[in-house]
Length: 375
Ligand SMILES: Cc1ncc(COP(=O)(O)O)c(C=O)c1O
Image (cartoon, rainbow, N blue to C red):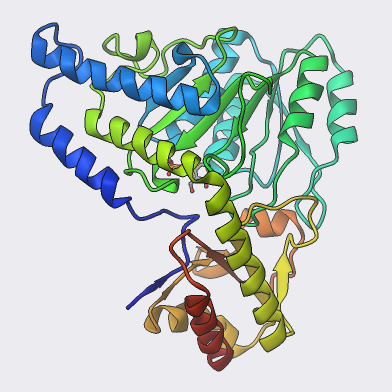
């Protein structure tokens, strides 16, 4: 039996979400853009999902737009805000997800936008005074601040409410990739002034291939994908009715159980980190001393050794699913861009373990036992 500790990569579908989606796929095959009865039924499922997601985040219904992924939503915000809002400067940091960093690189290269990368310290934290001082300079430039809620490799949390206030004070747009935080952190979009927020269904036990963009009613972007008039002309393409509805149901479940899930995850994380330090004292927990951390991610660095080099392989053959913190570039293993940004010693081997509400302490104990024999 596999022990799945890779919930930051993706999550299993909730059984009730599967049943719900199967029902919809069987009975609601209409095209939501069709004006006949069967099409209208499909459309009403989409609108019900939009209402549910908006209510769960305290947003207005008209502020939620469905996309195929958070990758698409993040591309959309960064690329369209240049054209539609006249953004000429972006402020972000090197620990963002690649879909944000690569989108920024592209607009810098192709559209002459300037970018300022905030410094991150060794825990992954940014300095809000630096953000404030950057936003205080060149005030004539329309600026988009793009900072994620919770980091997908380290689990560290950026102080989103404080960032939102700073952006408001300096009239900058605030784009927040909330993929790892949605359903886990309390999010109230009626009180936190975020211009754009993005999410991905498969990170909270919904289906893959669906995500959404929250776009504050004051900052409407134009169409990123051209075609039909779906999503109020913002995102063309026939909607995945079952996917969208499954996502809304998964979010409803996760938010309903948010407090208890949070406690379970926090307990798993602290148990895991305490016993790994007890059994393998040479490990480093990346981001452990950050100001705030999400409870489902533990990034662990092992000291260099031949055994550590084979750790992913050995975890895999022992049935343990986790993620490597390195990427293979031209045949050479290198630290991920996030680990490089926090100046992690590259000779150490990093593994991200990420927990879900169904994991147990017994599973964690088993993983540590196996890790000890591997290392
Ligand atoms: C922080 C963050 N942003 C964006 C994404 C991309 O999400 P999607 O799989 O929906 O494209 C991920 C996925 O790992 C992520 O962790």
